[in-house]
Amino acid sequence: MPGHRIVVVGASLAGVHAAEELRAAGYDGDVVLLGAEEGLPYDRPPLSKKFLAGPAAEETLLRSPEQFAELGIELVAGHRAIGLDTVRQRIALAEGEAVEYDGLVIATGSRARRPRFLDGLGGVHTLRTLQDARSLRAAFTGSPRVAVLGGGFIGAEVAATARGLGLDVTLVEALETPLAASLGPTIGGVLAAAHNDRGVQVACGVPLDRVEGDGRVERLVLADGTRIDADLLVVGVGAEPVTDWLRTSGLALRDGVLCDSYCATAVPRIMAAGDVARWQHPRLGEVRAEHHANAVEQGAAAARNLLASPAERQPYAPVGYVWSDQYEHRLQIIGTCRPSDELVIVHGSLEARAFVACYLRDGQISGAVGLDARRQLMRMRPLIDAGADREALLAAVGPAPAAANG
Amino acid sequence: MTGRVLVTGADGSRTELAVRSGARLMPSLKAAELGVLGLCGGNAACGTCHVYVDAPWHDRLPAPDADEADMLDDLDSRRIDSRLACQLRFTEQLDGLGLTVAPHL
Image 1 (spheres, rainbow over the protein chains, first blue to last red):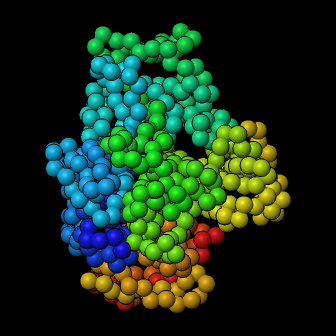
Image 2 (cartoon, each protein chain N blue to C red):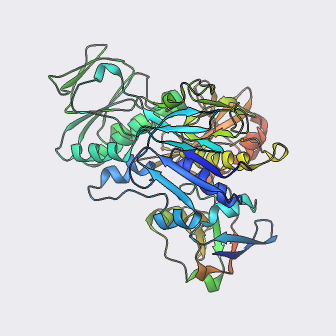
Image 3 (cartoon, each protein chain N blue to C red):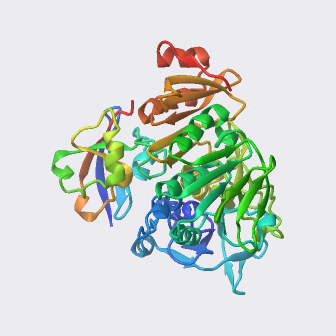
């Protein structure tokens, strides 16, 4: 076991779970959980839904101060790591201090991407932190016309929540539907229709040309000349891993911290987990995941492997699970889905907006998406585990599945 | 403080787990590979940590919140004693708690 003190840098979901797992696995040295944001660690999924919708809703804390105390986890909040010296085993903090470690888990997560051309323009929001959510929630109270740029999970959820508050909402996405980049246009089209029915203007398939406004956002202009008037712009164009503090550390960085299949970097006793980690998935190759369930599981896996002897280490090979709530709909994904996969609808129908769609890659099921079909979706899980082929899939789900295109 | 939870697995096996006060039950059940998947990481969003709580204990638990109640309503194998293990926090008063992992499918 690594020495007297393990430091976990990043006090969000992956970091909290790493720190907790160190204790669960019997580590009795110091555990320091270092977070850049002030306050107690909180859960992010409600920030685009419940928290954003309710003017008085409180944040969902991950753990209470008593729970951290009971576990002997020292939470150091409001201190940003700005550098790492792997030889002297020290983390430099923005305040000029340094923290020494014997073992390290890097869990600094990701930050919302904010295009440069929006610099200096008022009324532009991203959504990642509690602070972001508070600020967006306050901005919603003035009945603004809202434009959401980016039809990914965050964009689609913010659009749904804003519309639920009665706001005038336009969802702008360069691809032909929302969620097309992750699930393909067929499933994305179902989501687009759901938004449209609720009164969201869905402007998909045409890229943004520019944002106009005198000091503040006033309108978006698309490449085909379409003008969308807006008082507020929410930008949901993806996230980037927070690795700038590691630039001179010597750790291998490429859109994340590069790790082996055990979540270990090339430097002994330094692991990475959560959004910031790009690891070798035993079945899928190099993966970086920006999802809740992965942060939980990878945080714990990295902690266990940090404590384990080389022979005891376990490769980290999750199946993957994602969910998204939009209006009354719950979308759930297990395994991996790509737009280029072949789609097979095995339950319900796209028209009914209740279905399970399986994604086949090289003839084998690699993932599945369910819309308001939790039970039926979970039945796909053993088939995904087993990498079932089409025949086995169809045998398992029973007669008369319909094929769908793309 | 660490206490005991007596678990009947999905396969009928019986296991005694040590659980720390304040901890949610799902991670321990998942780690023990007793048929609990806990896919969503503890958000009452997937229903894969569904358990039946033994009769003397069931009434001593705090009632499910709205998210948990919604998810329970959606489960095929729902019973009056159903709970999601990810929403159950272990306390000293629950030492000796008995539960059974519910079938998933």
